[in-house]
Length: 523
Ligand code: NAP
Image 1 (cartoon, protein in one colour):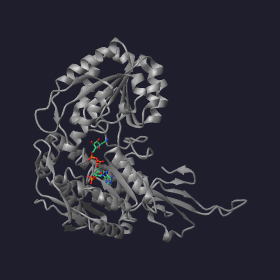
Image 2 (image 1 turned 90 degrees about the vertical axis):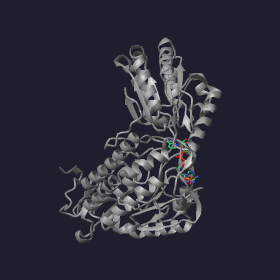
Image 3 (image 1 turned 45 degrees about the vertical axis):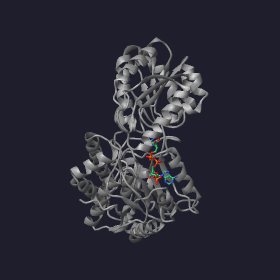
């Protein structure tokens, strides 16, 4: 397919008028064709008008039809074949195997949401039948289901050009909930975004759905993004990116006459706890696993292990030495964009002012190559310097040496909200792990034992969320099928005649949903 460099508003390709965005191959710094002229407020207006016009029809599509749309999108993305893989590699510097894996994850995610839609559990149907004879007052017939919030604005992420961009988790979960989606493409990968966006538009057409179900906009300099979040027809926002970007979108959403929820996934340093027995008995294996997790994908994962917490002593010294040796053999890796590379360099310099450098990876030999770094500090210093817990996006991590278990607890209490917290522990570490657990439950969305935080499974039980600044709303997840809940709200129908009720709530339960009926869960 020839890339057009145009916005996609419903089924129409439209040229932008604003400053052009051009992808840059971060491995060479070479610009890639074509240029994508940015959209303006008029384009946002058009996309929102179409999305609003589509909303009432789309949110009431039969569950099977909506599931078919998600599956058709996956099929159309797969049909893009090598062109998609090659363009995504060129725009991100990510290796082919990673992009192919991410494509599989993206399509698997769409199909997982299709299964979720068909099951209908998310409708959360509750029925309290009328009790006309109840004393002292009769009870009305009350029926609740969940409906879609409205059109959703999705901001593509730089670090997941497929799985968290145009057809990624935010889009899949919003479409599954019955919400039309308008994506603001990430400027780092406009060609990948166009290919995927056109695959979605083809799927919408193929399924005979209103064109406003999906639009794709481009724009630099925040204009399009802020106009989108401010439009009264947008009812929720999904975002993955920087803390400052996420906060700006939350503020714009709150400043509207009608504030709306923003589900922003922002920054997390993902503490890893090395408990004494584990550190004593498998120090080398821990160092190996840690360095592999830290350097995977040039460290550009939101779940990257940016903090290691352990008791000071010979075992920790051994771990630092072993991890340092391994890290020093790691080649530097191309980062996603010149901007992200430069932010990494700045972050590493800032850390170096406040902590000791234990090791560096192999030096860079070309443009935008991130060199891995391992830092060490004492718990006192960590507790007294907020800069030491700022996310450095890339393969940099800080080891915090604690005097005793109480010190470890103080460091944990001091942490900001996190996506994950990892416990490396053996059986004899159980009492210490148990004592720390209540703190970690308050701090993080996902707690792991004897694994590494990178690699987030897309499944029903996953939580990829956590208290601020990991996300702007700790009550939700952006990965896994529970992400659909972000884009729903409950509606109660009182004393409705059966003919006026939505099918999900009708007396004879035509959708065969597992309802909560008069306090009992149906089989
Ligand atoms: P970003 O700068 O936050 O941008 C992400 C998206 O949000 C872009 O489309 C951007 O559009 C938009 N945006 C940002 N600020 C905005 C604002 N004030 N108003 C309206 N729209 C706004 O993130 P990035 O480009 O992916 O990477 C920058 C840094 O974010 C990285 O160096 C890293 O520190 C962090 N990051 C963290 C994660 C994570 O998962 N923890 C993931 C990715 C990035 P414009 O380009 O038009 O501004």
